Length: 385
Ligand code: BGC
Image (cartoon, rainbow, N blue to C red; front, side, top):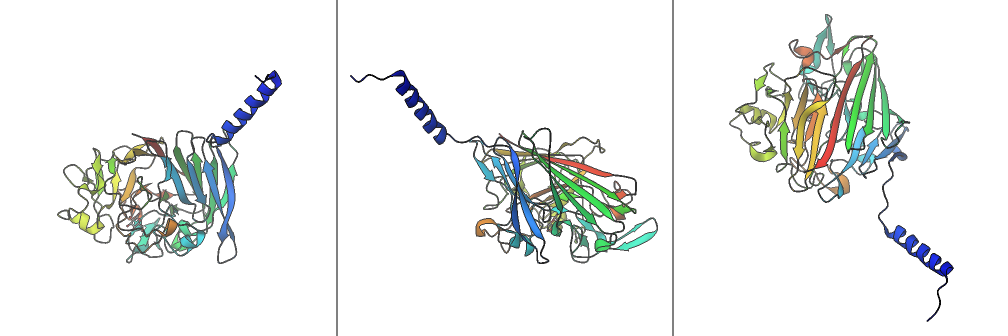
């Protein structure tokens, strides 16, 4: 038999180790990376930022509209897959989407007829939704280029992207120059923390949110109707036929709006015996919590996909959430991989103040004055069940 010298043994062991390391799945490295995403018609460059945590959750966020383009979350087998609707490239967003993944401002949801009065001054906002003002107007915060900054944190495992936008006095009809700031932080526990801030130089109104369309099963290939929702909200706001709140706060108990226990979204979505379902063409309403704004994010909603096991909890400092079931998706918007997003293939859980608050003195105020700071935090946390 041939003699093997200790040195050869060492060499063989080293080679075996090298081979197995090469074949082992590499541990994802937490961090944030910037890549060019495209050019706007006015020549400005747009970037996209990839945020990754050490579990492998990955978010791609562009500074055009502060838009979340993709977001991977694990299923019960640990397979990470995209869970949001969106486009393959900047041009998709420039051609127009129903606010896929974008930051919404200055005012999330509707202001009736685009008018409101503040300190005895009446303001006329841009109207873009059957005579009403929706999601900040014709060119809301979803269609502007934000200044982006990668934030150096003490914990590199929490990649953080800060976006800033200065909205001029009079933009879309709003009073006051508004400096808005939105900070996205991807946390170790597969949660995205979104922190919103704003200051103004004149009294104005502010209601910021994010408009991601979630589909925990397959990012929009099939409907969201079999996914289960819990809404921790004893009341909702009935609307008129143009989706403006009537002013009433109605208990959900005993109605098709009751999601206090896990309920399939599709269970009662077509129950038009409730006129509110007719008006919304499904769910497109604001649900409100019983608590006052505590400053600490609290659970307002949980979404669960029984097929994949994905669970998403929504925690917020906001007093309400607009739950929208993609009723206006009709296959005409083509998304990632050439996929037409059909009816109800994505849903939104937009944490916010109540729609049309500037015209309802009884609703929690959305007024921001010079010297004050608007602050709001929402956390979307993923796990499996
Ligand atoms: C609104 C819907 C609207 C959708 C996007 C939601 O926040 O409530 O009525 O159609 O955004 O277009």
